[in-house]
Image 1 (cartoon, rainbow, N blue to C red):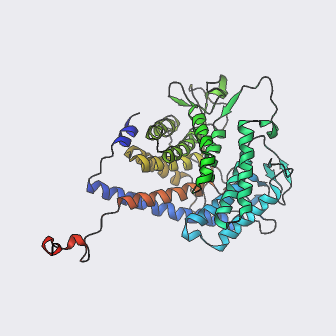
Image 2 (cartoon, rainbow, N blue to C red):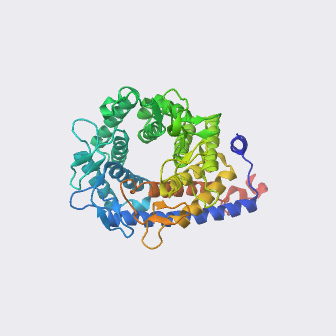
Image 3 (cartoon, helix red, strand yellow):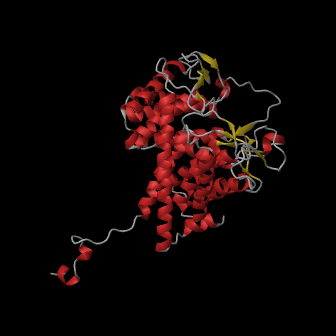
Length: 440
């Protein structure tokens, strides 16, 4: 598995000079990421809050102007989760405004997300005042609802939020592993029995979310986490040379465009989900495999050698993908890549992964961030020009960018802590006392 495995087996300390340079580079990036996180959060705090009906506007123009007041349940749940996570993990975001905004978003979800309560199915789109417009036949609105409720419980201590999270989690697992009919998706005779990588990915993310610092729930979902990891690993196909977005239910390759479809950003996101799972389990072989197949492999195939950045979609046989946007550069794959490579480096010590973090981060900050109005553009052409000036829409909200920045800030801080030079012996330090004195 190459250099990633070698570094997992043996990490050779860098010479002091190299360590100084590495410390300077990491410190510079930590400061850059920290400042950008502040700017991004300020953008959403200023422009997205609906003071009249609760919840958040996500259809925001370049300067934050609301261009549509529809509310997308995915993005409502994500923003509640993001605010709670920032409130919980970062002292500078621990303010009543952040917490109150998260609670207002959570209460909006509690009142309106479910289409026909007490049923669990959630809407995909709501009117500004909470009337359902559209339902998707997937589990993702419910997944982000679960994440929001669990984080609200963590920052408020209110059991009703955790009851919602666990109850919805049970329903999602039932839909995925036992009976999907409640999702409203008809079983048609011509449809292949396929599995998208998104489903086990999201479930693995929920296992991590609900099991954090909770031994009982972590134990409850341990088997589910292993099942999710195994299902994700089935997407490594063609003798380990490709990560395919869709496979058959028994883990085989599908025919046609569906079977050849690749999403490099999704593979990288699955990579850091799997890496956290492997670290929790203390499984070095899985950690090495994840770095090789879900970090290095998708980057090698997905990075545009001519213009930089990650392709949105690819075809495993090198044929032209059918999606019109296949060659565009989107915000979220680059956010996921930054997390994945920094996490991989933090775990393995492989300098190749740190170099890739720097490469992706430099491209991302140069091309996506908006120094004038804040936040990031989401949609670029292949050449890296801004294709859409909007900062939010039906799929882009307060989530991928701040999650990336927050996680990178934490990891960079931890790395700098590990690289901190040992303090010089002071007059009160035993090492500074002459041996003959210490012997008295």
